[in-house]
Length: 203
Image (tube, rainbow, N blue to C red; front, side, top):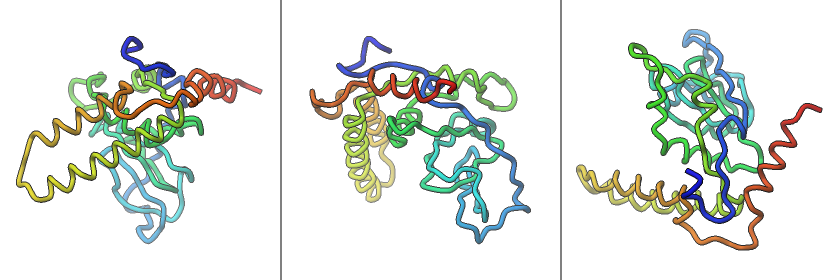
């Protein structure tokens, strides 16, 4: 992976960036659907509750069932026990990391032959590319702009497999550093990773 990285980028594992945390069980009968906290399972949004397990936006990843699925929350949420969740450090755009993980075939790391599941060590070891923060933000904006145009095209077409192929191509370009121009004044990813490592060291 590192041989394909652009100047100023670095390759690390998910576990180098943040902890992989387990969701917590919350059965449907216990949920308060009038609450403002979104409840996430491995298939995405499954309900609401009146209190949150996590207050900040997090990346929710399917652990069982829809293993390897990736969802980005927008605020207070409750990821349930069929999921993991990640709290990206401030040096990493949550959207950048979520789009990248969503473009990866995490389900290939399924270690079960009967019930689909994603092992925590496998997720922690998953390699990800880290760009300078300014470039991360430009990449996210470019992805959203391209996908918005494709959504508009798709809304008037019955079915077109080329659209999904274009989405995959856009994501490949994005995370190989070829979707947007680089700014030589951007702080390199190596400096971001140094700060992340320092913040995770025991006091």
